[in-house]
Amino acid sequence: MKLSRKNFLWWISGTLVSASLVTGLGCVLREESATPAEPGETGEQAEADQYSYTGSLGHIHRAHEAIVAVQLKHLEDMKNIAILDEDTINDCFRRGEYLFSVQMMPLDGAKFLEIMDEIWDVVREQDPGNPEHLFTLSAAEVFREDNLQAVLNEIPFMSKAEMKRFITVRELETKSGADSEVLSFVLFMSLSPFYSAYTEKVARVNDFSLWRQGHCPVCGQAAVMARHRSTDGARVLFCWLCHAEWLFPRLVCPYCGNNDQDKLRFFYVQDDRALQVHVCEQCKRYLKTIDNRALEKDLLLDAEEIATRHLDLLAKNEGYHRPD
Image (cartoon, rainbow, N blue to C red):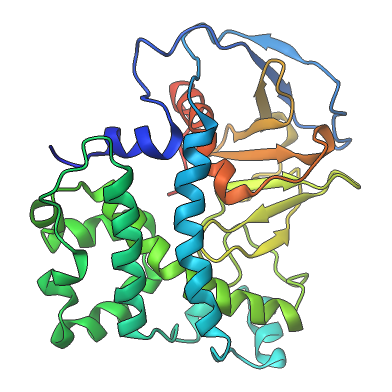
């Protein structure tokens, strides 16, 4: 049995996204406004008869906790990671340059392989078929000692699409028994502790207030999640990889810069006003958003990015696509 995207989504979100499950999800559509909508407001009812979502949130939390436990364990070993000085950081942000575009991300090869194998073990254990033939990723030729440094100099700057191409070119799908979606996830999650350690140190000396872009100020990845602050409704973008957070105008598309209010809208599942999808009619991209004003507590956005796969399905069926 191949560890495929379908099986991967089964264990990571607790649901198989199939046609038989996609029925009857109510959806409310609103245009963006300069005045943030209150949590209790309703909008125009949109047709969404072909959508639904079922699944066990307990399953996603267990899988997420296992991966986070691996990351946190190794994060403790990265406290001495070197960052740019404060003046250089500010200069980069004023020029619109994310930090990894001017500084090579320092990666310890042995530590990276150790993290990668532990996260890979989580993936193998959580797969419902538990295919025994899946090999240890670090055994692949591309990660051997004579190739490792060149790979580590390359993959930290990859987008999700570029990572998938890297996996295909290196034939990791064939050799591992998993598809590029799963392998990409494992590689990015193995990089994440290094990125997070770096971001944590940067955040101690800089609040990202000079950053005006829709992509991450640290690693350059496109934001795919955001939250509205409970205090004032301001939009805070979130990096899924390094966990940086930064303010970004609500009435501007973070992907194409469109600020035409008539082309910016959002929708949400009826009876769940906190989970929203903000869309841009100009570039047809979407941003999943958590409205903390409608909640009694803050949610972990990295977990919610996976737990809200039904919103991805809804957006894609409406003709919108992710920035990656």
